[in-house]
Image 1 (cartoon, rainbow, N blue to C red):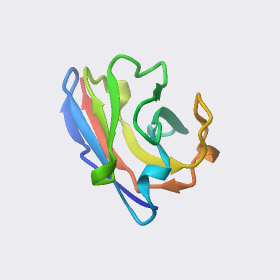
Image 2: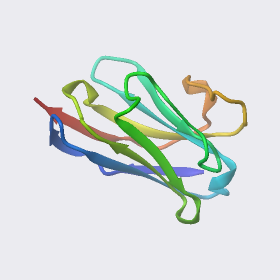
Image 3: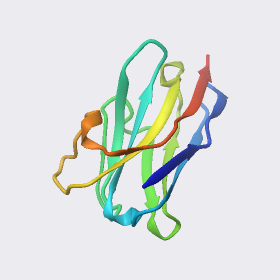
Image 4: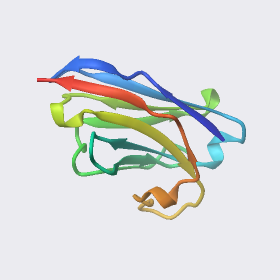
Length: 125
């Protein structure tokens, strides 16, 4: 699976932004898909995962209630809707896909086989 994240940009605190992760290659609906982020000087942090069907979503506590992950398997795309953005949300955001069906899903990098190139989100105060 090849993944490409897009939609990043520079926004102000309190604004909203929607990221997209477009997939190609293998059957996308066979994979649960996650979003991670990496702030400058920090490790890659789990944001959330959506199940293969899109019925189940699991979020990190830091984004719960503000971020929403959805997917459209007909379009081979997963979305990350980010509302009420804060300066601490500034990071490069990555999408990743992996197999398996355990729930809750893995929150570590090793749980996902395929990674996109990342898109920069900058939130100014």
